[in-house]
Length: 419
Image (cartoon, rainbow, N blue to C red; front, side, top):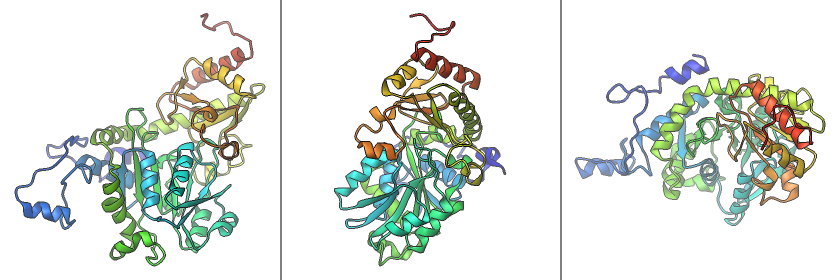
Protein backbone atom coordinates (compact mmCIF):
# COMPACT_ATOMS: atom_id res chain seq x y z
CA UNK A 1 0.00 0.00 0.00
CA UNK A 2 1.08 3.56 -0.66
CA UNK A 3 0.99 6.16 2.10
CA UNK A 4 -2.60 7.46 1.92
CA UNK A 5 -4.06 3.99 1.40
CA UNK A 6 -2.08 2.68 4.38
CA UNK A 7 -3.47 5.46 6.56
CA UNK A 8 -6.99 4.16 5.96
CA UNK A 9 -6.50 0.43 5.45
CA UNK A 10 -3.50 -0.74 7.47
CA UNK A 11 -3.85 -4.10 9.19
CA UNK A 12 -3.17 -2.45 12.57
CA UNK A 13 -6.47 -0.55 12.31
CA UNK A 14 -8.55 -3.13 14.13
CA UNK A 15 -12.33 -2.87 14.30
CA UNK A 16 -13.89 -2.50 17.73
CA UNK A 17 -16.37 -4.81 19.40
CA UNK A 18 -19.18 -3.49 17.21
CA UNK A 19 -17.24 -3.19 13.97
CA UNK A 20 -16.24 0.43 14.65
CA UNK A 21 -14.26 1.97 11.81
CA UNK A 22 -12.57 4.30 14.34
CA UNK A 23 -11.12 3.39 17.75
CA UNK A 24 -13.66 3.95 20.57
CA UNK A 25 -12.72 6.50 23.22
CA UNK A 26 -12.11 4.57 26.42
CA UNK A 27 -12.57 7.60 28.68
CA UNK A 28 -12.18 5.76 31.98
CA UNK A 29 -9.81 5.82 34.92
CA UNK A 30 -9.79 2.12 35.84
CA UNK A 31 -10.88 -1.27 34.45
CA UNK A 32 -12.96 -3.89 36.26
CA UNK A 33 -11.89 -7.53 36.80
CA UNK A 34 -13.94 -10.47 37.99
CA UNK A 35 -11.23 -11.80 40.32
CA UNK A 36 -7.99 -10.66 41.94
CA UNK A 37 -5.95 -13.41 40.30
CA UNK A 38 -6.44 -11.89 36.85
CA UNK A 39 -5.71 -8.34 38.00
CA UNK A 40 -2.56 -9.55 39.76
CA UNK A 41 -1.31 -11.04 36.47
CA UNK A 42 -1.88 -7.70 34.70
CA UNK A 43 0.11 -5.81 37.34
CA UNK A 44 2.89 -8.38 37.10
CA UNK A 45 2.90 -8.04 33.30
CA UNK A 46 2.15 -11.76 33.02
CA UNK A 47 -0.94 -11.21 30.86
CA UNK A 48 -2.21 -8.50 28.56
CA UNK A 49 -4.84 -6.18 29.90
CA UNK A 50 -5.58 -2.77 31.29
CA UNK A 51 -5.80 -1.80 34.94
CA UNK A 52 -5.48 1.99 35.17
CA UNK A 53 -5.34 4.52 32.33
CA UNK A 54 -2.08 6.04 33.53
CA UNK A 55 -0.37 2.74 32.69
CA UNK A 56 -2.39 1.67 29.68
CA UNK A 57 -5.61 2.40 27.80
CA UNK A 58 -7.18 0.79 24.68
CA UNK A 59 -7.52 4.12 22.86
CA UNK A 60 -3.84 4.88 23.43
CA UNK A 61 -2.90 1.40 22.27
CA UNK A 62 -4.74 1.89 18.97
CA UNK A 63 -2.96 5.20 18.41
CA UNK A 64 0.45 3.80 19.38
CA UNK A 65 0.05 0.92 16.93
CA UNK A 66 -0.92 3.29 14.14
CA UNK A 67 2.12 5.57 14.52
CA UNK A 68 4.51 2.66 15.10
CA UNK A 69 3.19 1.11 11.89
CA UNK A 70 3.65 4.34 9.92
CA UNK A 71 7.22 4.70 11.17
CA UNK A 72 8.11 1.03 10.69
CA UNK A 73 8.72 0.61 14.43
CA UNK A 74 8.28 -2.31 16.80
CA UNK A 75 6.63 -0.45 19.67
CA UNK A 76 5.47 3.02 20.70
CA UNK A 77 4.51 4.95 23.82
CA UNK A 78 2.08 7.88 23.62
CA UNK A 79 2.84 10.76 25.99
CA UNK A 80 1.07 13.83 27.34
CA UNK A 81 3.14 16.20 25.17
CA UNK A 82 6.07 16.33 22.80
CA UNK A 83 8.27 17.55 25.65
CA UNK A 84 7.13 14.63 27.82
CA UNK A 85 8.13 12.30 24.99
CA UNK A 86 11.63 13.79 24.67
CA UNK A 87 12.07 13.80 28.46
CA UNK A 88 10.96 10.19 28.80
CA UNK A 89 13.10 8.94 25.94
CA UNK A 90 16.27 10.60 27.27
CA UNK A 91 15.70 9.57 30.91
CA UNK A 92 15.15 5.98 29.82
CA UNK A 93 18.82 5.71 28.75
CA UNK A 94 20.58 8.38 30.83
CA UNK A 95 21.39 8.68 34.52
CA UNK A 96 23.53 11.04 36.57
CA UNK A 97 27.05 11.27 35.12
CA UNK A 98 25.98 10.48 31.56
CA UNK A 99 26.20 12.75 28.53
CA UNK A 100 24.01 13.56 25.54
CA UNK A 101 25.45 14.78 22.24
CA UNK A 102 22.84 17.00 20.59
CA UNK A 103 22.50 19.29 17.61
CA UNK A 104 22.76 22.96 18.57
CA UNK A 105 19.83 24.08 16.41
CA UNK A 106 17.07 22.54 18.50
CA UNK A 107 13.60 23.84 19.35
CA UNK A 108 13.71 26.32 22.24
CA UNK A 109 11.70 24.13 24.60
CA UNK A 110 14.10 21.24 24.05
CA UNK A 111 17.04 23.50 24.83
CA UNK A 112 15.35 24.49 28.10
CA UNK A 113 14.85 20.81 28.95
CA UNK A 114 18.50 19.96 28.35
CA UNK A 115 19.48 22.74 30.75
CA UNK A 116 17.12 21.26 33.36
CA UNK A 117 18.68 17.81 32.91
CA UNK A 118 22.03 19.32 33.94
CA UNK A 119 20.55 19.68 37.44
CA UNK A 120 20.12 15.90 37.46
CA UNK A 121 23.75 15.40 36.51
CA UNK A 122 23.07 14.69 32.82
CA UNK A 123 25.21 16.96 30.64
CA UNK A 124 24.70 17.90 26.99
CA UNK A 125 27.46 18.59 24.47
CA UNK A 126 26.34 20.46 21.36
CA UNK A 127 27.43 20.05 17.75
CA UNK A 128 26.67 22.46 14.92
CA UNK A 129 25.86 19.43 12.77
CA UNK A 130 25.60 15.77 13.67
CA UNK A 131 28.06 14.71 10.98
CA UNK A 132 30.74 12.09 11.37
CA UNK A 133 33.72 14.43 12.04
CA UNK A 134 31.81 16.35 14.73
CA UNK A 135 30.48 13.22 16.44
CA UNK A 136 33.85 11.48 16.44
CA UNK A 137 35.30 14.47 18.30
CA UNK A 138 32.44 14.84 20.81
CA UNK A 139 31.51 11.25 21.71
CA UNK A 140 33.19 10.14 24.93
CA UNK A 141 32.91 7.06 27.19
CA UNK A 142 30.14 8.95 29.03
CA UNK A 143 28.00 9.50 25.92
CA UNK A 144 24.72 7.57 26.04
CA UNK A 145 22.68 9.00 23.15
CA UNK A 146 22.93 11.18 20.06
CA UNK A 147 19.86 13.41 19.68
CA UNK A 148 18.72 15.82 16.99
CA UNK A 149 15.85 16.93 14.80
CA UNK A 150 15.52 15.58 11.27
CA UNK A 151 14.44 19.05 10.08
CA UNK A 152 15.40 21.50 12.79
CA UNK A 153 12.81 24.02 13.90
CA UNK A 154 13.27 26.82 12.92
CA UNK A 155 16.82 26.69 11.49
CA UNK A 156 15.76 24.15 8.82
CA UNK A 157 18.99 22.21 8.95
CA UNK A 158 18.58 18.58 7.88
CA UNK A 159 20.27 15.71 9.68
CA UNK A 160 22.11 13.22 7.50
CA UNK A 161 20.63 10.25 9.36
CA UNK A 162 22.72 7.48 7.75
CA UNK A 163 25.94 9.34 8.51
CA UNK A 164 24.93 10.23 12.07
CA UNK A 165 23.74 6.68 12.71
CA UNK A 166 26.98 5.18 11.42
CA UNK A 167 29.06 7.37 13.71
CA UNK A 168 26.77 6.73 16.70
CA UNK A 169 26.70 2.97 16.23
CA UNK A 170 30.47 2.81 15.76
CA UNK A 171 30.72 4.28 19.25
CA UNK A 172 28.08 1.94 20.67
CA UNK A 173 25.40 4.58 21.28
CA UNK A 174 21.89 4.97 19.79
CA UNK A 175 20.59 7.74 17.56
CA UNK A 176 17.32 9.39 18.67
CA UNK A 177 15.59 11.57 16.05
CA UNK A 178 12.84 14.13 16.59
CA UNK A 179 10.91 13.88 13.33
CA UNK A 180 8.04 16.21 14.24
CA UNK A 181 8.60 18.59 11.33
CA UNK A 182 9.12 15.82 8.79
CA UNK A 183 6.38 13.31 9.75
CA UNK A 184 6.35 9.77 8.31
CA UNK A 185 5.04 11.30 5.08
CA UNK A 186 8.41 12.91 4.27
CA UNK A 187 10.75 10.38 5.88
CA UNK A 188 10.94 7.34 8.12
CA UNK A 189 14.11 7.78 10.22
CA UNK A 190 14.17 4.15 11.42
CA UNK A 191 14.59 2.96 7.85
CA UNK A 192 17.53 5.37 7.45
CA UNK A 193 19.42 4.10 10.49
CA UNK A 194 17.89 5.87 13.51
CA UNK A 195 17.03 3.79 16.59
CA UNK A 196 14.21 5.82 18.14
CA UNK A 197 11.84 8.37 16.60
CA UNK A 198 10.03 11.05 18.60
CA UNK A 199 7.11 13.26 17.60
CA UNK A 200 5.21 16.11 19.11
CA UNK A 201 1.85 14.81 17.95
CA UNK A 202 0.32 18.23 18.65
CA UNK A 203 1.74 19.36 15.32
CA UNK A 204 1.35 17.75 11.90
CA UNK A 205 0.14 14.35 13.06
CA UNK A 206 -2.89 15.95 14.73
CA UNK A 207 -3.23 18.73 12.17
CA UNK A 208 -6.27 20.39 13.68
CA UNK A 209 -4.67 22.19 16.59
CA UNK A 210 -6.98 20.50 19.11
CA UNK A 211 -4.78 18.16 21.18
CA UNK A 212 -1.44 18.22 22.98
CA UNK A 213 0.57 15.01 22.81
CA UNK A 214 3.80 13.23 21.96
CA UNK A 215 4.93 9.75 20.98
CA UNK A 216 8.13 7.67 21.11
CA UNK A 217 8.65 4.91 18.52
CA UNK A 218 11.33 2.27 19.11
CA UNK A 219 12.80 0.31 16.20
CA UNK A 220 14.09 -2.34 18.68
CA UNK A 221 17.18 -2.98 16.54
CA UNK A 222 19.86 -1.47 18.77
CA UNK A 223 22.04 -3.92 20.72
CA UNK A 224 22.30 -2.48 24.23
CA UNK A 225 25.52 -2.87 26.22
CA UNK A 226 24.06 -3.36 29.68
CA UNK A 227 27.39 -2.76 31.40
CA UNK A 228 27.59 0.62 29.72
CA UNK A 229 23.92 1.64 29.97
CA UNK A 230 23.36 1.55 33.72
CA UNK A 231 19.82 2.89 33.33
CA UNK A 232 18.89 -0.33 31.47
CA UNK A 233 20.77 -2.89 33.56
CA UNK A 234 17.63 -4.17 35.32
CA UNK A 235 16.04 -4.81 31.91
CA UNK A 236 18.87 -6.96 30.54
CA UNK A 237 16.61 -9.98 30.00
CA UNK A 238 14.57 -8.07 27.40
CA UNK A 239 17.52 -7.66 25.02
CA UNK A 240 16.76 -5.24 22.19
CA UNK A 241 13.37 -4.52 23.78
CA UNK A 242 15.01 -3.18 26.97
CA UNK A 243 14.48 0.48 26.08
CA UNK A 244 10.78 0.00 25.28
CA UNK A 245 10.14 -2.02 28.45
CA UNK A 246 11.94 0.42 30.75
CA UNK A 247 10.24 3.33 29.05
CA UNK A 248 6.74 1.93 29.51
CA UNK A 249 6.98 0.13 32.85
CA UNK A 250 9.36 2.53 34.58
CA UNK A 251 9.71 6.06 33.17
CA UNK A 252 6.27 6.48 31.57
CA UNK A 253 4.31 4.92 34.42
CA UNK A 254 6.23 6.55 37.25
CA UNK A 255 6.43 10.07 35.83
CA UNK A 256 2.75 10.00 34.86
CA UNK A 257 3.25 11.43 31.38
CA UNK A 258 0.44 9.48 29.71
CA UNK A 259 -1.62 10.88 26.86
CA UNK A 260 -5.32 11.49 27.53
CA UNK A 261 -7.61 9.03 25.69
CA UNK A 262 -9.58 11.79 23.97
CA UNK A 263 -6.33 13.35 22.71
CA UNK A 264 -5.23 9.97 21.35
CA UNK A 265 -8.56 9.66 19.55
CA UNK A 266 -8.47 13.17 18.08
CA UNK A 267 -4.91 12.74 16.85
CA UNK A 268 -5.67 9.26 15.52
CA UNK A 269 -8.42 10.62 13.28
CA UNK A 270 -6.23 13.62 12.43
CA UNK A 271 -3.63 11.33 10.91
CA UNK A 272 -6.23 10.03 8.42
CA UNK A 273 -5.52 13.10 6.28
CA UNK A 274 -1.80 13.45 7.02
CA UNK A 275 -0.68 12.63 3.49
CA UNK A 276 -3.14 14.99 1.82
CA UNK A 277 -2.33 17.80 4.24
CA UNK A 278 1.45 17.44 4.01
CA UNK A 279 1.38 17.37 0.22
CA UNK A 280 -0.61 20.64 0.12
CA UNK A 281 1.34 22.27 2.95
CA UNK A 282 4.72 21.53 1.36
CA UNK A 283 3.56 22.83 -2.02
CA UNK A 284 2.23 26.03 -0.42
CA UNK A 285 5.44 26.54 1.56
CA UNK A 286 7.61 26.19 -1.55
CA UNK A 287 5.49 28.68 -3.51
CA UNK A 288 5.39 31.18 -0.63
CA UNK A 289 9.15 30.93 -0.07
CA UNK A 290 9.84 31.59 -3.75
CA UNK A 291 7.55 34.65 -3.67
CA UNK A 292 9.11 36.03 -0.49
CA UNK A 293 12.59 35.62 -1.92
CA UNK A 294 11.67 38.12 -4.64
CA UNK A 295 10.66 40.87 -2.19
CA UNK A 296 13.12 43.66 -1.37
CA UNK A 297 14.81 43.39 2.00
CA UNK A 298 13.56 39.84 2.61
CA UNK A 299 15.84 36.84 3.07
CA UNK A 300 13.76 33.66 2.80
CA UNK A 301 14.78 30.27 4.17
CA UNK A 302 13.10 27.08 2.94
CA UNK A 303 14.50 23.72 1.88
CA UNK A 304 12.90 23.99 -1.56
CA UNK A 305 15.07 26.98 -2.47
CA UNK A 306 18.04 25.81 -4.58
CA UNK A 307 20.44 28.02 -2.62
CA UNK A 308 19.53 26.44 0.73
CA UNK A 309 22.62 24.65 2.14
CA UNK A 310 20.55 21.50 2.84
CA UNK A 311 18.63 21.53 -0.45
CA UNK A 312 20.22 18.23 -1.52
CA UNK A 313 18.34 16.42 1.27
CA UNK A 314 14.97 17.24 -0.28
CA UNK A 315 15.53 14.37 -2.68
CA UNK A 316 18.06 12.45 -0.62
CA UNK A 317 15.97 11.99 2.54
CA UNK A 318 12.65 13.87 2.33
CA UNK A 319 10.89 12.32 -0.64
CA UNK A 320 11.14 15.46 -2.76
CA UNK A 321 9.41 17.73 -0.24
CA UNK A 322 10.80 20.78 1.53
CA UNK A 323 8.53 20.66 4.58
CA UNK A 324 5.91 23.03 5.89
CA UNK A 325 8.02 25.53 7.82
CA UNK A 326 9.78 28.52 6.36
CA UNK A 327 11.50 31.46 7.94
CA UNK A 328 12.55 34.83 6.63
CA UNK A 329 14.58 37.73 7.91
CA UNK A 330 12.93 41.11 7.75
CA UNK A 331 15.93 43.36 8.44
CA UNK A 332 14.93 44.45 11.94
CA UNK A 333 12.72 43.36 14.82
CA UNK A 334 10.51 46.40 14.31
CA UNK A 335 9.94 45.60 10.63
CA UNK A 336 9.30 41.96 11.52
CA UNK A 337 6.59 43.01 13.97
CA UNK A 338 5.00 45.33 11.40
CA UNK A 339 4.89 42.54 8.83
CA UNK A 340 3.41 40.04 11.30
CA UNK A 341 0.82 42.52 12.54
CA UNK A 342 -0.18 43.37 8.97
CA UNK A 343 -1.05 39.81 7.93
CA UNK A 344 -4.70 39.06 7.21
CA UNK A 345 -4.82 35.27 6.99
CA UNK A 346 -1.77 34.08 8.93
CA UNK A 347 -2.60 33.69 12.62
CA UNK A 348 -0.17 34.85 15.29
CA UNK A 349 0.28 31.67 17.35
CA UNK A 350 3.10 29.53 18.74
CA UNK A 351 2.14 26.13 17.29
CA UNK A 352 3.20 24.55 14.00
CA UNK A 353 1.58 21.92 11.79
CA UNK A 354 -1.93 23.35 11.90
CA UNK A 355 -4.34 23.41 8.97
CA UNK A 356 -4.09 27.19 9.22
CA UNK A 357 -0.99 29.25 8.49
CA UNK A 358 0.63 30.35 11.76
CA UNK A 359 3.28 33.01 12.23
CA UNK A 360 5.49 34.04 15.15
CA UNK A 361 8.58 36.04 16.10
CA UNK A 362 10.71 33.28 17.72
CA UNK A 363 13.35 35.49 19.37
CA UNK A 364 10.82 37.22 21.61
CA UNK A 365 8.77 34.09 22.38
CA UNK A 366 10.07 30.55 21.90
CA UNK A 367 13.70 31.51 22.55
CA UNK A 368 13.11 34.17 25.17
CA UNK A 369 15.19 32.18 27.72
CA UNK A 370 18.06 31.45 25.32
CA UNK A 371 21.28 33.39 24.96
CA UNK A 372 22.00 35.24 21.74
CA UNK A 373 24.58 32.60 20.85
CA UNK A 374 22.08 29.76 21.39
CA UNK A 375 19.38 31.59 19.40
CA UNK A 376 21.64 32.17 16.43
CA UNK A 377 22.81 28.55 16.52
CA UNK A 378 19.12 27.66 16.11
CA UNK A 379 18.75 30.07 13.18
CA UNK A 380 16.88 32.67 15.23
CA UNK A 381 17.80 36.34 14.90
CA UNK A 382 16.12 39.52 16.06
CA UNK A 383 14.53 39.94 12.63
CA UNK A 384 13.51 36.28 12.05
CA UNK A 385 9.88 35.43 11.30
CA UNK A 386 8.78 31.80 11.41
CA UNK A 387 5.85 30.68 9.27
CA UNK A 388 4.08 27.35 9.66
CA UNK A 389 2.30 27.14 6.32
CA UNK A 390 -1.25 25.81 6.18
CA UNK A 391 -3.58 24.46 3.51
CA UNK A 392 -5.10 27.76 2.38
CA UNK A 393 -4.96 28.62 -1.32
CA UNK A 394 -1.36 29.50 -2.11
CA UNK A 395 -2.33 32.57 -4.13
CA UNK A 396 -4.12 34.03 -1.12
CA UNK A 397 -1.16 33.39 1.17
CA UNK A 398 1.27 34.98 -1.26
CA UNK A 399 -0.97 38.02 -1.68
CA UNK A 400 -1.28 38.32 2.10
CA UNK A 401 2.47 38.31 2.75
CA UNK A 402 3.29 40.58 -0.21
CA UNK A 403 0.67 43.03 1.02
CA UNK A 404 1.93 42.89 4.64
CA UNK A 405 5.53 43.56 3.57
CA UNK A 406 4.46 46.49 1.42
CA UNK A 407 2.32 47.90 4.21
CA UNK A 408 5.16 47.52 6.71
CA UNK A 409 7.29 49.65 4.40
CA UNK A 410 4.60 52.32 4.11
CA UNK A 411 3.35 51.25 0.69
CA UNK A 412 -0.36 50.44 1.19
CA UNK A 413 -2.13 48.61 -1.62
CA UNK A 414 -5.54 49.50 -3.01
CA UNK A 415 -7.22 46.55 -1.32
CA UNK A 416 -5.85 47.36 2.16
CA UNK A 417 -8.60 47.37 4.77
CA UNK A 418 -8.98 50.81 6.23
CA UNK A 419 -9.10 50.84 10.01
